[in-house]
Image (cartoon, rainbow, N blue to C red; front, top):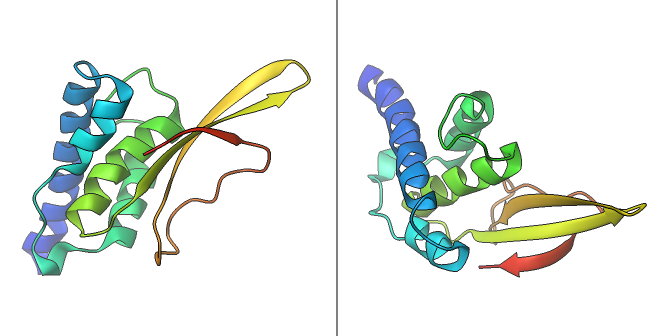
Length: 128
């Protein structure tokens, strides 16, 4: 039981490092598809809610650096949830408010309530 408690954080850190490495090398459309191509985790570790909780707790300290929190979180969870056997969709959206623009990234997964709901007013510009 203790080993599982150490394995999940290790998987999160490795996913973040993999994402950071891929982000420097691939354009967005290829990046998202490449992040998704991961081996499945053993059934005992397929707990997307637990991975989400770890990423939400640690994203500030995880690579890649220089990304907005929502984008970093979405990339890392895309990797982890794909390893859990889910098929997450990656979304980018823009909201215009009084002449200023704000971007946001989020994931959705059919049949999984853990996925983030985007704030109102974001118009999708990219979905993969």
